[in-house]
Image 1 (cartoon, one colour):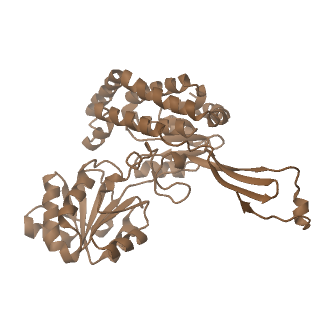
Image 2: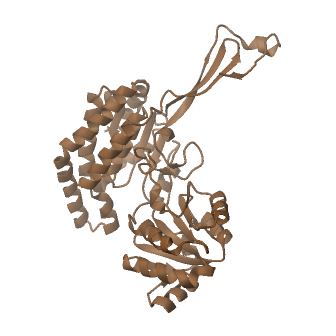
Image 3: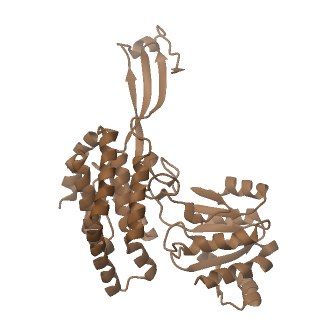
Length: 431
């Protein structure tokens, strides 16, 4: 398949999809949900082949968990589609309406971005999330999933595209890239693709950013932190940290480093270490943290150097460090973090306020698991990814992150010359 030629066709089809009614776009989501349920055995059979191939290729257990697409993930996909269907149309919103002068009206109106290329990791549920968000937001999409889930993705894409066409959307609104070499072809489509959203490893996202002229939205890593303050509820803190680590350790919003206030370290660190150890988590830490844990519990803690805190584990491994106060915690997070999601556990409002204001991340939490950083959990229906950048979209990117805007100006023959000479004046009245 010639990706460049297909992208050029899609660029021409983009205005047609952007103009499609919300009824058609919602109908597509409804049909996808029904088709997933009706064809689930075919989906599961394809996924079984992918899982068997993963075993043959000795894929890591944490990654295999991402590959699996079972009844639970199917249920979540359908729930996400239903939630997305019920959300307000993000297209055609009047964001500003201003009368520049009598009979001269300026409006800013939300519109789809156009053609979006999404290259995502080996997660079949991401195929459903990404495609459905692009459909609802009126964007054409070129979708490239990981080779580890090639069979599942193929079946899912066929279900999604067939449903979209049946709903009356343009036939060329969705395209699946299946070959690895097509990634580089996609990166060269800067004339026709408006935005790239990569989801994968740090190295992979960096590669995308460095080899394309197309704007890229996303994040290269998920080094998330939890700081346990001296005024933390320690009984609350342990299960929150454990959940943030083990609920889905391969996710970008899983916690990688726990910072503990020195005032409570002797008391709290042993409790936390036992809770993590019982959950199968390997402990790493600075010598100070390790000495406390070993002396109090006898558990093994691998000593780590300061520069090792920049590592994203994506596994049942966690880093521990003792800090003097919330200011040192914030300094550590802003230096080593990836600006993804970070949390403070405290009952002290002043510490919480300082942490919330000073931590430079897309998500800043208090007393909850970092795993809440998710478009579905935020009520976005789903997400195409999480952006740690500061332009256009930040955090879980749902519908609002997939639209931009245009200005429309309506008048009745006004000319700039009249305003330049002072014959007429602007009065800039919002209406």
